Structure formats: structure tokens, C-alpha cells
Image 1 (tube, rainbow, N blue to C red):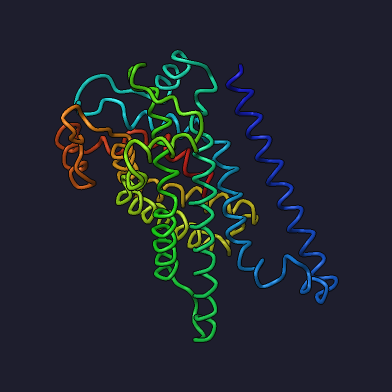
Image 2 (cartoon, helix red, strand yellow):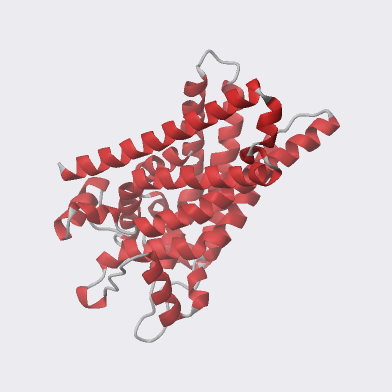
Length: 325
């Protein structure tokens, strides 16, 4: 019951914030239509704010989505870490993982790492959506000057570049999120019991060095590029295709999101899997790490656990990605 209430409260908060944002946008549009000169001089219409709003809107949207789907992300990470190095054996499901988390602690443990998740969205999503919107606007201006239209190739390039740049900036927060979510899998004596994302970041930097905050950066960047390619490029393309359909504007957006969420999940899940494994790993007693890097992780998982292990939890991952789309 408490799990249901927590999720309902998070969803209600997300709906309220979305409604407020829509009302603000509508009010600004009406003001601009009624008095163009006043709108032009308004603070939100200054050159600085016009450039900043895509980043602000992107970060706010990502943080709202994270608040709602954080339990799903927690389950996704635990699914990816289950049965490491074992090809056979029991296959965990989202339901069994959820039961284990609740049985080991309390319902709110599903929200472990929320502070890191919010920081990650504040940095990563703010950057990727802001960069993507900025790139698309520049491409539109260039296409207009040439008398052409933006194609799928341009959308894909904008999505890949925006995702890669944002991933490098947001890697420390992403690392902290994985460490906080995987901490409960360790024996009690080895747990760090991070109090917050700030505690996790400072603890990792002190014990492993500042450079460790960018552990798993390679698969994180590739994963972000693959995800953005699937999410942003296919969303933009699908919405363009649905434009002439009989669907309402809202239905067009939701349908495009569903399409984008599928392709984003398909392209990025293997890299997300490897990213999780690399960011969670810690040194053995002899000082070595289980995986030397992205390629080594791909090779060992494929040999020891099977190719399909990279797509374990695809449904859960899709449910996690679709709301962000």
C-alpha cells in the first residue's frame, strides 16, 4: 500500500509540475500574441533566456521524469548486476527483484540514489536536450537559407553529438547513482551507506581519486549517443510522420514517444548494461578490477553469461526510457 501511495504521490507531483509549465507557456504565448512589443522586452524573451530556456526546460523535464521512474531504474540496475559471471541459474524478474529490495529493507529503498538521479538529470538531461535544441535551431536556420528541409541524417547527427557531450559532463553523477543503487548488494561490512550524492562523490574521490568519477565514461558516452540517436532522432522523425495523420497533437506526441522509446532502448541497452557493470566494480584484494574496460566487459559477459544477457530486463528498461522520451 505504501509503495502504491509513494508512486501515486510522485506521479501527481509530476502532473502538477507539467500542468504548471503548460499554463505558463500558454500564458506567455497569449501575451506575445496580444502585445508583441511587450513580449519582446519581457525577461523570458531576452536573447540570454531564449538560449537558456531549452536547457532549463530539458533539466526540469528530466528531473520530473526521474522522480516518477526512480524505482524502475533501481530495479533495472539490480537486474543487470544479478548473476554476474554466471551463465546459468535462476533468472531474476522485475517482481522478484522488487520483493528482494523490500524484504531487505523498506519500500522507500526503491528510491535509493534519488538525489544522484536528480543531479544526473539536472546536469545530463539539461545539457543533452539543450544542446539538441540548439543544434536543431542552427540546422533549421541553415536549411532555411538553402531552401531545404532538415532530414533524418541531420536529426541523428544532432542527437548523437548532444548525447556524447552531455554524457561526459554528467558521468560523475551517473557513477554516484550506480554506486548508491548497488551498495545494498554488498555484504553489510563492505557497504558504504552513502547519505547523499554529495557524500558518494566525495567518498569516491577521496578513496579512489578524482579520476575515478569518470569510470565507465566510454560506455556512458556511447550509450548516451545510442540512446539519443534512438530517442531524439526517432521522436523527431516519428512526430513529423504523424503530423499528417488523424491523431490529435497530444496523441501524436505520445505515439512518437512510444516509437522513440523502443528504438532508444534497443540501441542503448547493451551499452547501459556494460556501463552499469563498469561503474559498480571495485578492486579485488590483489588490486585488479573484474573488467579492464568496455571491450573486455563485452567479451567476458558474452563468454560467461551469453549474448542475450545484454538485453536482460528490456521491458523494464523500456518503461524507464519511454517517460523520458
